[in-house]
Length: 610
Image 1 (tube, rainbow, N blue to C red):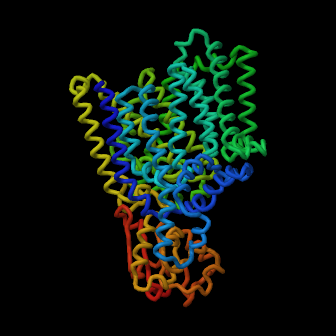
Image 2: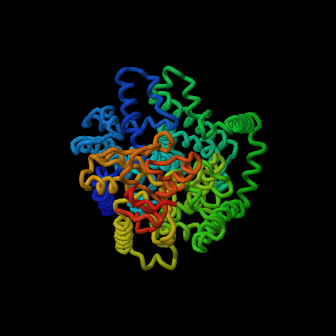
Image 3: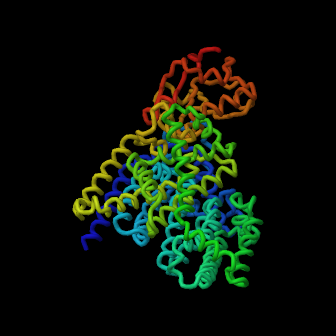
């Protein structure tokens, strides 16, 4: 009873903290990319379902069906999004801005509640996997992570994905631990939901296949007959795949009228399009080798790796330590090796080597300091440990991180905070496992009674609240105090500071008759005057501008555009001139108190000619 009470108290505390920090932000945030969903894709899905136009449920290349379904609940309480969309760049009345604010509030609220409702599921699966204490610690680390809270407050596919993908991995691991089919079925359902959220989830198909063999490598001696194990495991894998495809087919109506969409969502998706032939070849070889040749090759290889498991896992750990060490050394040496930050400005054009070398930078400094510290210590402490279920879980989660980084790098995608948001819960779980291992060690076990463990939970809760308070309300732009102030972790933020800039502009005299240019278009939705965010020469040529709103996160993109197109504003103002650091700013906001992560508003007449 006491143990159940501890879970309820921790859960209520975490949810209450989320509501306290998160609810006000739902109305005071101007997000980038959100208009694509709020005005277009979310109402498109619900309209298509209402009218039975199933083909139109193919919303985009994400495809974002689960996001649109969850967020769309808010349409019941909102005005017509299409009518509000027309106001984006126009002059607006305070009443119209209030309607836009309400629209975003009601579309964001179901997404936020969805992430909170999954916290008990996280607890239940982690408890099954690694015990009650690990589950309670994970609940605090995951539930009070600033970046996870930040993404949960947006109409964005990553808000849903950061829940579905980690839960999917946890469910499959519980299935492997308990050999209980219901967790296999749950994994199949979560996999299907993940696929219709964002196609990157397809990476789990080869990963789960790999886990069949990794489990035997780590735990082979418990299997009396390897051939029986592999036959059953591959059959179960096939069941999970079929369940996931059935979920996609059932909940993605575009598949009903165009069955090929099922292939486009899986093997022909961006996550698979380069390797689907090789993946199918591997499947066929493994199936033939298992059912026809009685594992004559895989069993001896796995038995060999089992005997030298420590060397095998040590190689993976060594790769992780190298990348972690590289990220830490480069950061604290003043980016001596190469500057990570420009890589995150243009994450879609990343070099493989640089992408891999910078991969742990956003993760380590995006975790709260204690979570990051215990994450590293846990990896160090399990580098050469004897076989146990905990070491297998840690290794599996770490191995997935490396595979995820490698896959992103191969596809030319830089590892920004948002692009690797699904890894933060996994890192939090690793940190929690490590803390419990330390608690159960001979040195600490006699000191850490059940009561002292609850004190530890309380302390971690308080420290996590401090982290949230320190960044409030710019949660997605969080960088821990371990990161030197001259660096920015999340250059590709999703609009932080835009709402605050709009409020400043709206309070200027005769604001409704002013004209601005902003490098973050999100500010335009909340500004009462005329607004322009064009990056095209025709869009700015001879455009009258009273104020410029500029940001560190968009500076490089705007300068590149200006240099290439040679565009000028009215009065002959060039793009590079508005970013000149000596221009006097009417308004400046340093996000996270980092001077290099700024939002500035500059009067056009104050721009210094270059």
